[in-house]
Image (cartoon, rainbow, N blue to C red; front, side, top):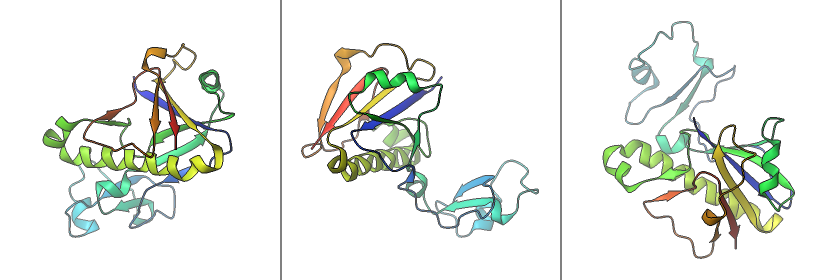
Length: 188
């Protein structure tokens, strides 16, 4: 199972992908996402792929230079399966939000040592989250987030996990997470 994340605002938020920096964009439907991370060329990176890509053409590949370049956010409208999550929010506009790369808004100092590549990507994703919130909080007042396991959107939130993050005082350290059934309110 995986966590699913939601974000809300008093005003409509922009939809789409945020914080990514593609070197080359696929002109057709993307079938392969590649990041170079130390490779000297796209060809040398493609040679390291462990599966058959002979049926994929270069216009079906998205290319990023580093893990940070691919580590962004995706904001989308709710669908019929997760509309029940709206009960957790005070704000009118509720959206699904998720990392573009990786699966969680989670940062752990141990991964900095044991998996530094993922740590760098996770940190950039969380920085993008806070940048998105800071850019949009002026338009819609306080913003909110809620996290739960996929399929458990209707469960009651765990109110003892509720927290407020004051953006003007927040500093991202080496550890950060939004827990299962946790509500977070972001204020200036």
